[in-house]
Amino acid sequence: MVHRNCRALLFYFITLLIVTFCSILPTLAEAPKNYLKGKFYSSVEDHFLVATEKMTDDRFKKTVIVMLDNDEEGAWGLVINKPIGKVPLRFLVNTLQDQKNEKKELYSMEIPIFWGGPVDEKQIYILHSKEYKNDTTKSYKGISITRDYKILFDIAENKGPRRYLIILGYSGWADGQLEGEMEIDHWILSELEPQIVFEEKSKNKWPKAYENSFIRL
Image (cartoon, rainbow, N blue to C red; front, top):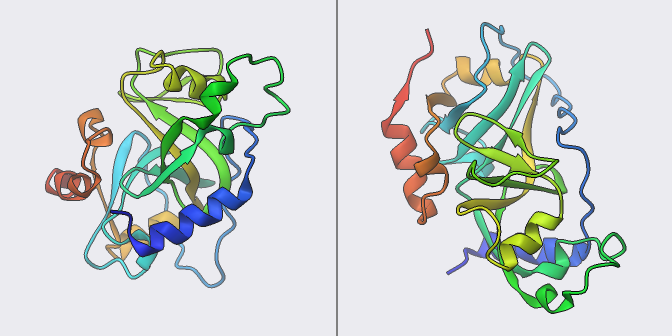
């Protein structure tokens, strides 16, 4: 059953109708006013960022984020345990880009989607297992991301990656913002494990990642 808030999000995304794929890397989020700026020590890329019980932002309670970039200029990653629901493939593909595709029957296929974060919620990220690859695929530790809309047709035809998450939006932090949030114990780190990323039951991801968490030295 989809949570009431998830239903609202689902309705919002359906009203967008068409989503255009852009570059593989997002623009880092602008910092909120008066945020606590921490000190950058080392990158948390290729780790899980796991919300603690001290998290005060309701959007991120019991959240697990795959961290895909982090340096002195900021950070970004994708939430992996917030399912929204299912939408027809036609809502995720720019039909103007896809005029040559003859498999129009695939447009009615329903695709499960996840909320990746509050930044740029019109953008799609396909997080998937590493055996699948095309020209737009970028590899990380144990996982990959592909932004070519054709991967959606491969998924619909069971020709895509064995395991995948289709994610809308991302989570981003300005310089020092994530570090500040970690200093007040809103987040802890955990080893990135593909089996948790693609765990069938999303409600199990946070407790499993939290159990494996550690304190950065």
